[in-house]
Length: 177
Image 1 (spheres, rainbow, N blue to C red):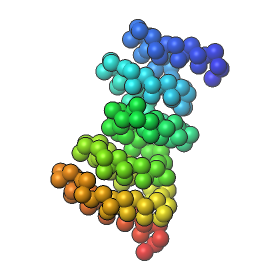
Image 2 (image 1 turned 30 degrees about the vertical axis):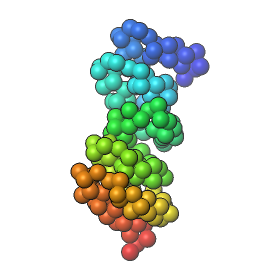
Image 3 (image 1 turned 45 degrees about the vertical axis):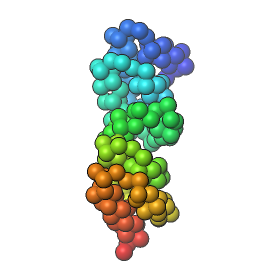
Image 4 (image 1 turned 90 degrees about the vertical axis):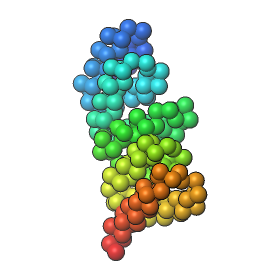
């Protein structure tokens, strides 16, 4: 997409007219790639419209370009997007992209977040192909979980135990044990 067309779409995304924003999102959805992904994430952050949010989530759910993982992770690692963790995390496992190298990040979020966000982090890890997670990341993640067991809220204890089992099973899958 040309630079000029991207600039026009970006302007439309941040229009005060909701119809214009929705039309821009429709155009982006048709492109089928990660164009303007950072702008879409910024829009999700400032957006107040449920319809716009629904369209953004649909775009994120259907991302299929591996390069978009870097952009999504950059947003999730930015404290500004903390309030959107649950929303963005829900789109990650729907997209089916490989977030295996970020497993430890999601383990940390599992420890820090409320039950619903922790469940999203759990789901991402559980749905990650074992071949995309190194043994080092698995070991580091299990160690972090065990070191922080006292920080796990009562309602997450069962999920915590299951997460350790999921990681151990992924390690066994990779090592063939």
